[in-house]
Length: 457
Image (tube, rainbow, N blue to C red; front, side, top):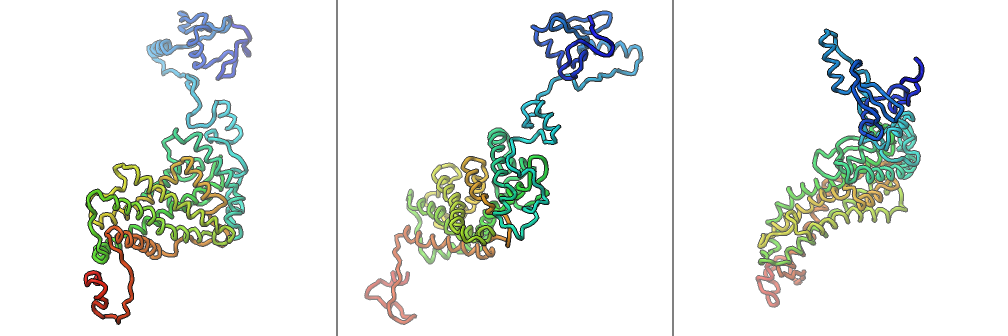
């Protein structure tokens, strides 16, 4: 029986409708599935309706899909224009969107009412999300140092929050890679792949504050992103200069180099050649990259204007170099198909070519490691980004190793400086410098002490 009057009902309020006397199809389906709540469920002939009696004293009249279809056919036979389902949005229950960080619809609605983004993942600490692009730390690059700007932007809290979100919601759960996820969390550019030096990485250009806006982000976001771009750019410049130097100078000089320093082909299974290659890749790249990274970083305002951070510059340089040498050793010891293991009885130029390819490949593998989102990667990036080391500030100038030519020279010197004594050792030669005391042009001046063949070498 119906209790209540024309303006009110004594029935229980519906979950979705919040109105007594009206419940959604979604709630009806939920009740029907729970047999312990159902007292009766039948079709009433005269009204052509489903009747559900539940919870002992509650009842509702509704239409199942079958009854609705039957009614539609009846109305069509009477030439009526059609039918309407006024509560189609109440047909089924839906879970909170998977991409939303809200754990319930109550939290989802509360975030909306509070003006927050219900899709924001994780918590935010500090004040970095309340700052805007008109803040002094954004607009004043002339009078605030990088360290001061980093602090005013509360970038330390921003970085910690972003890393917490990465670990909780993305790592091992999303197809997005680390740098793309970081940019997504900060509402930055899409498709960012700082873990590769390929041309379509979208990690090769700095952004402005206005590129990072929305709920759950702040101006610190664009400086975190720009720091990524700086790190990525260093390795990109190094690889580009290395490739150019190898193509235009080193490769062309190898034949003349062999003739002058007389290397001998390695005997079969001679492990010395593998050791030479390992040393040339690991130690050689340190010699080439060390001055480059040091020069690049020293041009950054954080290091250029702060004499007290000289040791920090050294540590940061060694951190960057260490990534390359560690990866080189790991790759050479894996025995995998793409490891840099030389073929047996290969010519010397082949080994040198492998070393150059390895140096170039190291840059690619290093950025892949730096931006892989592992705990080790995060620890490394934290040390590189902290205190605004890689952002602009008071007295800023463009960083770099002076010129591309200077970088190429560093690479060439490092390559041959290591290759010459190494190949002498492999070939069994023991060269030394001797001053005979004779005038230049004298032929075989010390024939009493050395054979002509030895002197001519």
